[in-house]
Image (cartoon, one colour):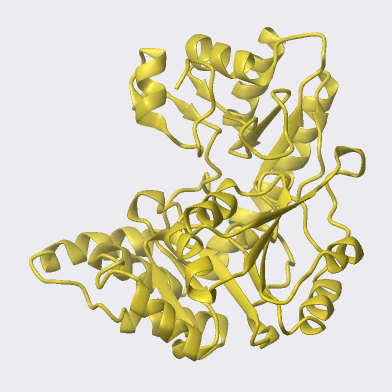
Length: 359
């Protein structure tokens, strides 16, 4: 991997520290889209308590965690399958569904494509256009569908932050029962007023959700799928026996049952909404194209007269100790694109000052 090449994912602090000659602790990370408020107190307390249980194997069925997630979402625990991060479930879905073909948008989260390639599934890519803010045309998508397809859609999309109209999407999924639909809601908890697909009750729909971004638990690796009970049981048979460790299960259960969870979620969304708006306006004033986003991150396009994204990212890292996400390994994006997380006001101002100096 060359000095300026992008990592497959954001948040690679150890490698970034080696590149920059700085300590990982000193870096300000805008490359990973993690809640800047940090871990909820209930999760931290549960982790401390669960340390004493590390001499025992975790519950392979994740009974308490599945119950907590089901109660939180208002669905049966039989429909919940936790995994070692949402990533594990993303990689195994093409195998479970025996997809004849995998449809993805471009750009979209890179591992939809990587998982299809690993399982030898043919890939169909639908290119989104920057001229309309990378919006997805569902009518155009419907014309590409074939029986046996697996369609991956981010809600919101990563890296653009765009949402799909939920009513239109629900109608499209219901009208194509011979197509499987995987909706990645890894960042939907950050979106004020968003409608989740969890409650739609469609048998050909799988919803993937992450507990590592909104609850700042990235190092624990915890996510889950919501799908029909029969498919949940079948997917469980494909996964290793102890995909979810006891610390992750304890933290996930505790925070979902915490009476302070609603207040934590409200504080997070208020912070993200206000800071995203301020950050968007300020970045546009220094000459960057900022794409509309509903999520806790922004996709940016750098002006032609100036450094490209790998160059700017390298300067930010080495000169300022700030990490951003170069997006040239997203299908459909060239080296003029980068993505930044939305963090706290002081952190965002530090990024803006650094980018202003370097641009």
